[in-house]
Image 1: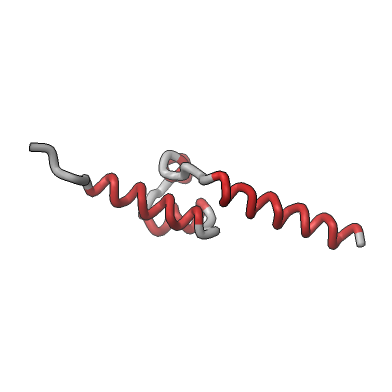
Image 2: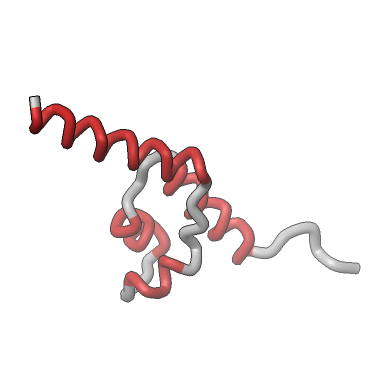
Length: 67
């Protein structure tokens, strides 16, 4: 019988939730104890909404600088 979840699944979910709540990859890297950022990027499956939030922040920063 297969276990309902694995420790790896919990780590991946933890990383995904952190990133979708505006944690940086650097922060997630440290939370997970990765020595290389490349390892962390495997966990960083960004949700569309998180990407939109970041894009909106960049747009607002540019708009403010132009005003």
